[in-house]
Amino acid sequence: MASNASVILKFSDGTVGYLRNAVTLDSATEVKTDASGLLNQAPALSVGQAFQGKTLTHAAVKIQTDSATTGAFGYASIVGVSGNIIGAIPGSGTNGQGLPRLKRPVPMMTGVKINVFPWKAWPTDKDGA
Image (cartoon, rainbow, N blue to C red):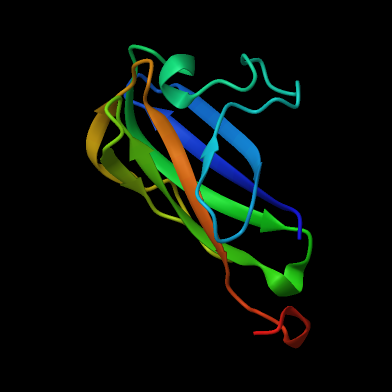
């Protein structure tokens, strides 16, 4: 099943960022800047490289699948330069509202990345679940 993860970001200076990648359900995947060419941002960069020097204050993740009847939930982790998790980003499931504030601000620098972990919310009989 085709799935995409979108992560919407807001920084302390008011800048808004957007990350989007194809992901595999039930597997952690790094999500990078959108490579569609529709936005005025460099494509396929890790969040820390794309937004160096900024401080991340708000974020949300949304998983989109190719079928409305087999949607997916997910969450994301902010991974630091040394590979440790330094923050969490909530997922919005089938409906979400607002852009949640992070528990603490996260400074952006090269090496910081966002990993998304999507999972199936409503397995169907044909999935064998």
